[in-house]
Amino acid sequence: MSVTSASTLAGDLELVAKFEEARPGNPTVTVDGRLIVSMSALVNPDIHVREVLADGSTIPYPNEEWAGRAGEHGKGIASTIGIKADSNGILWVLDMGNKEHTPKLVGWDSVNNKLHRSIVFPSGVVKDNSFIQDIAIDTLRNRAYIADMTLDKETGTTPAPAILVVNLETGEVKRVLENHDSFQSDGKPIYVEGRMVAHLDKKGDPVHHQYGLNPIAIDPQRNWVYYGPMGGKMIYRIPAAALANDMLSDAELEMQIEPYRAKPRTDGFTVDANGDVYVTDIENNAIGVVKSDGYHVLAKDKRLSWPDGVALTQDGILYIVVNQLHNLPGLNQGKDASKPPYTIFKIDTKK
Image 1 (cartoon, rainbow, N blue to C red):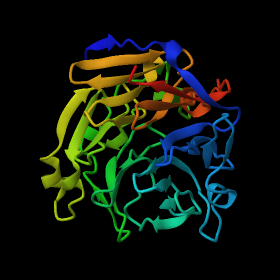
Image 2: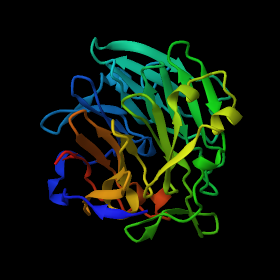
Image 3: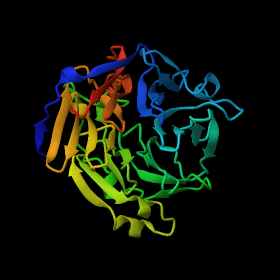
Image 4: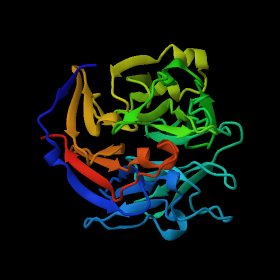
């Protein structure tokens, strides 16, 4: 993978918001320009979705009842990371669920400020070891594509990664391409700030994490769905029309997958209208863009301590969540090295 530095420097990073306690997860921008962020399920926050105001402060979005903890009434969120605002004004929140609550996909009408739809996932499509943490919305075909990394907490592996295809009209959900080669980690350890991302087993020995399928995105033209393993260095893509086609078998879908471009180890990415992929580079405290001529670093800075999710506006502003996930005890061999605040930055990619 060729790596070049772009003209944009780290000094062009602009701080948008700080979080002293709960970690932000993924950002998204609504059709009317509001910045919404999920609060990472890894730290079990009281409020799961927040709007970031112009002064950097935040409020629950859309309100405390729906942004707060899930209740028996069906409102609220059990746990989330994946969040995406679509071009029709619907904000989709991917609720990962927990022992008491079934995973669901919640669509909130951000224009009319009311519930659009709540789709509860049927049994079978989400497994006991599922980790459904990223989402792409296909408004052309009325589908959602969800990356289920799966996670074995003992071995640190992703044993059955798959894409979930949600029909946003009927509420039907299907699991496709489980364990495809393109979903797999390369098996090598991930190092962030000189430390291996690992937990300790019962004997006290480190077990490194081999993260598979993680980021997923769709281009603005709704032609291709892009995805890749966090613990791998390749972006793949598949035609959105194929993924949305209920008549195609896994074998037929597999024939339409193609390697796209090389990438660093990345927790989140997004794609622009030119097919350029903006990635978080977790091992190098950086963000960059993968173009046809290789990987270009946009910003490399110690403040980008595990850049997680990203969101790109139509005018080229890239929002980046930074949440130090590698400092959590479960990823840092039992030691909590967290150093608040956790942050959101933005950078103008058109400069």
